[in-house]
Amino acid sequence: MPLPPACRSRAFWDTLTILSFLALLWLPTLDTLFGLDHTPVPQENRLPARWPHFSGLAQSRAYLVAIESYFDDHFGFRKRLIRWNQHWKNQWFQTKASGDAVLVGRDGWLYYAGERMLEHWSRQTAWAEQDLRDWQRLLEWRRDWLRQRGIRYLFVVPPDKHTVYPEYLPDWMEPSAKPSKLQQLAEYLRAHSDLEFVDLSRPLIEAKRTGIDYLKTDSHWNAFGAFIGYRALIQALSRQFPGLEPLPVDAYQWRAVAYPPGDLVALAGNVSCQGAACQETAGVAALSAAAQPDLKPTVDPDPALDRTAGDGTPCFERICRTHNDQANGKALLFRDSFAESWYPLLGLHFRDVIYDWRYRWNWTLIERERPDVVIDEMLERFLNIQNPAELLRQEQLAAARATP
Image 1: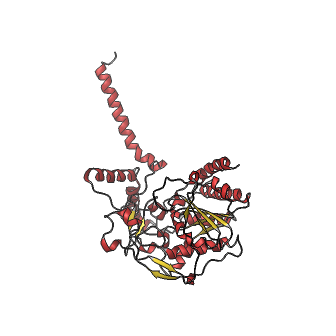
Image 2: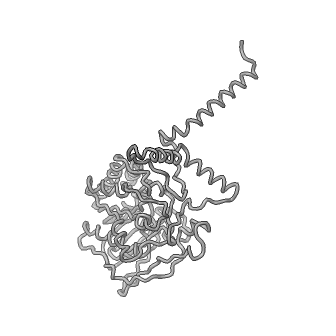
Image 3: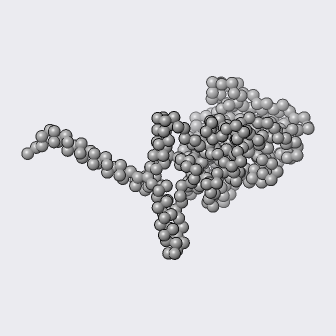
């Protein structure tokens, strides 16, 4: 005998409720097994607990407690739930969660915490063997494409600030013994490729014995750090262009100068620092006794290659160039904001230096300018989150369209 309509409707909703409950019950387990939650690790003034090391039966109780702590910090969709909680508190009670993008370190040091910085610092993410092979394929394909046109290639990675100055990170950020993604890539390329690759971490860390090379309240290096990076870059280029020689450090007098609060202060707002704690004290200026050519960048006039409508900011996300009648050759840089400090430096060695702010190459620009060398500059935190296989696919298509 068929059930009355009211009973069928109730049975339907009861079944739907049970299935929904079971689905919600299994979601954390599914995330644990398949990694469904890609939310960045939230800042909690501590790193998530790591899987413990078993030290023997005598320590079994501590081992079980550590396992419980690990699962407390890693149960399925925990990161997403914390993000929702922060968002709702902000929307309903106007309580902004501090430090989502900025970490407050010791002695007035601020660190950029976006782009999954906590996960990369704690080595929760690493390149798999296939990822490293994909990076090799991408970089060697770029090099070979340029080589067919008589153009040299160099890949250079400035390190993140916390890579050079980990000693000022918060106490709860314990370093990991595992290699970073940048270290993985550098070691892999040394073992499997003859590609010209420059990791600027070592020269910048060594330069700390001479002077501070990153700004305390900014995500960027200061003038001294940019100069150290320039020296390593020119030394690498000299292997392809004999005769190139960087300026020595004592070519300039390095003076401490007043510097406005950096980009991390603006990003943190009034939550992370106030008053004197927001002042920048690591600003330096390079004073030279020798006359240098005027190498102020000019915006490329070609509207077809200008990616922005223009907001009055010189060269921001635009194609810029420097010109020096006293030098020879042409260099093209695909870069980010770190390379802006190189305008007056690289121009000392090339007649023309062209800067284009992008990681996906502008193949039309390469074909038009036909430089002697393409310098591929990518900050460590952007390297960490790129998909080399997808970059290669897109760039092969773009290069095919741009090639005459």
